[in-house]
Amino acid sequence: MKDASSLPVVVIVGRPNVGKSTLFNAILGQRRAIVGDEPGITRDRIHGVAVHRGRCFELIDTGGILPDDPGLIPSEIFRQARFALERADHIIFLVDGRSELTSADLELARLLRRLARPIALAVNKIDSPVREALAHEFHSLGIPDLFPVSAEHRLGIDELLDHVTSGFPVTEQDAGDQRQPAIRVAIIGRPNVGKSTLLNRLVGQERAIVSEIAGTTRDAVDETVTVEGRQYTFVDTAGIRRKGKTKLMAEKLSVVMARKHIRQCDVALVVLDGSEGVVGLDATIGGYAHEDGRAIILCVNKWDVAPNKDKKAFVEKVRGAMKFLEYAPVAFVSALSGAGTSQLFPLIRRVYEAASQRIPTAELNRFVAGLHFEPEIKIYYVTQPSVRPPAFVLFTDRTGKLHFSAERYLINRLRERFGFTGTPIVIKTRQKRG
Image (cartoon, rainbow, N blue to C red; front, side, top):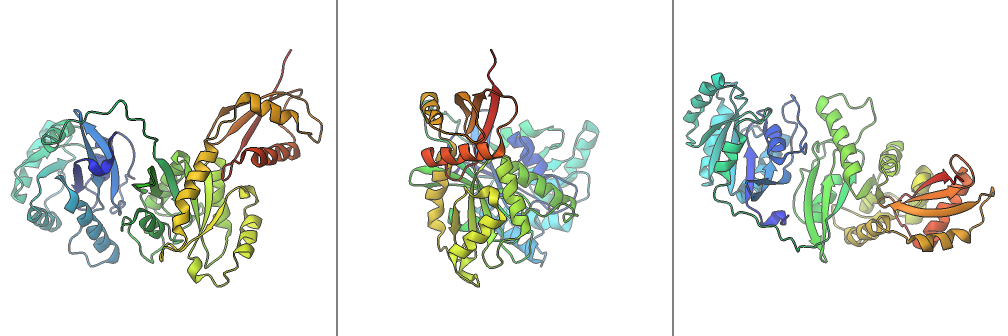
């Protein structure tokens, strides 16, 4: 697939709760944006790459726009949408076909017409021929290209995309393109530790909404950048709260989606607040990434305003609170000023390559033959069936798992011999029969 930055851009806009995220997911063919009945769930721009009849394009879902709303978050949403609209090759203006025209619809239509971009008016929630008559009332918005659709039931979307993509080039995928896949990096942490600021710093643009209000990010926002010939896709996830602390449906969905993006990433950047120190929730969030077998970097943000800048003492506190993450490197940064952030790219690559490392079976068995286990255990054979995380299967003379001390000994020796920096290691045992 081509780099998204070289593709035509289609932007979905509309006021809150008209079904933009549902349409985005329907076009993309996967659940990338959070969908729910609570207005204003999408706040940031969400990107994806879609293909329609051989025409490849970048699809952008924007937050619900209320142009005249004076509130901080709505005005930030509008500003973020303007970034996307300025890049748009075609705009899909989505309205709710089951509700009457609102002043917000009229004002937004006026703003869009000023942009002098091609606009398709998609009237959503038209899920039967009887309702199609409702769609024609929206011609009063002054946009001639009108399409009745049902994003939820995926009706009318092909006709809409036939029109939107008609001028786009047919994509010919290069079968000989052997480029390495992008390293997918999830930026995770509790609310307000600076995840969105870090994303903006790493990708070199104002990509996510940043504010002092904890929990501003709800969707996962992603952006791909190329550094020294290697692509990195960063995903800024919603701040993860403890169970019981998430009361709103949108926040609960955000946490579910954040957990999903942890499982799908290659590397997890666990962001800690250097000005506050380590708290119990940090260990819980780090535990999610550890349990899912992700390569992990502990990223101490806001180090420029930390009350005590003793890195060694801070690392000791981190290791004490997160004993299970003793393998994870610690990086000290300031996302706001950019201090220390340049070290993250080589560090991400290093832990990704460690997690992707596969040891030849013959070398593994020579290595294990030189180990001495307490309690004594006979290992006949060892192999590595998978990577990310590296997993090893030992065929032994007994049933059940290794004793925890023997497993810890083996993992430590594997790290000493082969590296495996920043990645958990999985050990499984099988009893050799016959």
